[in-house]
Length: 193
View 1 (cartoon, one colour):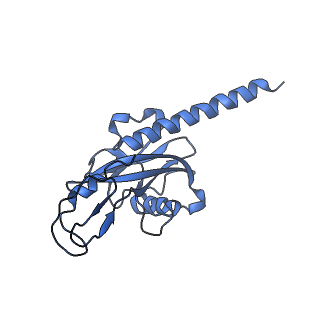
View 2: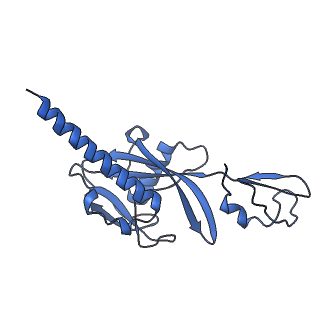
C-alpha cells in the first residue's frame, strides 16, 4: 500500500494551469480537477559515506544548518539529477570535507527511508549509505554546510548526537557488520590446526 507523500501538503496551485486546488491524500501523486495535470512525488535519493581511517575511526561532520543543526552527520546529501549514488557520495564527501575519492571506492552497505523537514515542508528520502576507507583524515576540513569535523571510533559515537534516524540505523548496522566480521575472523583463526 502506498503511503501519502507529505510534500504534497505544500502544493496549493496546479503547476500546469495555475488554478488553486486542495491536495487529496492519494498516495504519491495529486491531480488537478480543472486541467487533469497529474503531479507525482516519489522519494528523493540521498547518500552518505561512513569513511573510515586506518585506525578504525569514522569521519563525521557537525551540521551547520537546519534541520538538525549542531548534530553529527555522515558526509552526504541529496543526489543531483542524472547522478549515480556513488558519484553523489563522492561529490558530497568533497564538498563537505575536502576529501576526493573516485566512485569505485564507494561500497554500498545499507539503505533506509527518512523524513527530512526543511522550511516547513517534509521531504521523503531514500538514504543510501556507503563505506569507504582512507589512510588518515589529514585532508579533512569543514566545508559547505559543515560546522566542524569529528573523528571517532564507532563505539564512541553517541547515538543521541546523530542527526537523523536513518543515520543512527546505519551506524548500528555498520557496527553489527563489524562485530560479525570480527567473530568470523576469530572463528577462522580457531579452526586453523
